[in-house]
Image 1 (spheres, one colour):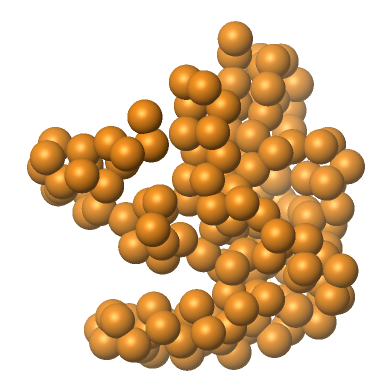
Image 2 (cartoon, rainbow, N blue to C red):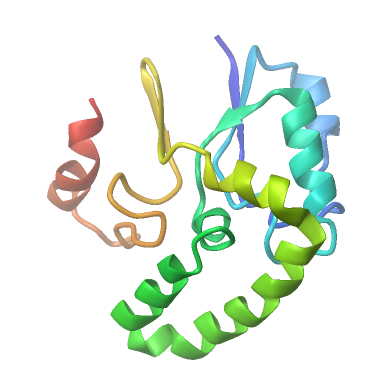
Length: 150
């Protein structure tokens, strides 16, 4: 089975290029979250994903649109990123307005984990859409975070 995973589109219609998917013609397409926030076309992206029927998972920016407290908590946990979090929150109001309540609710209803044996799809980690092991994480660290998904 050929599987494609599309992730982190962030409302960017220009980056939402489907030609490669049409060319490789996967058997299944999934999305890894972060669909709408950050770009000029959040409603377009959410509508296309829904129209295509792609299953997927909740990304951190998907989560913070209906649940702003998730961004507030992340900012509290990561003081070095507070200015970035403040900018994200400022932009979030515009994204929420562009999406409208139905699309925001749809994003909030996405599951954190999608298990399609033998694949486990998550945005960052099973416990958080915001925190994941860093690239230099050891095998033991990765196993402790992702091992339970088996």
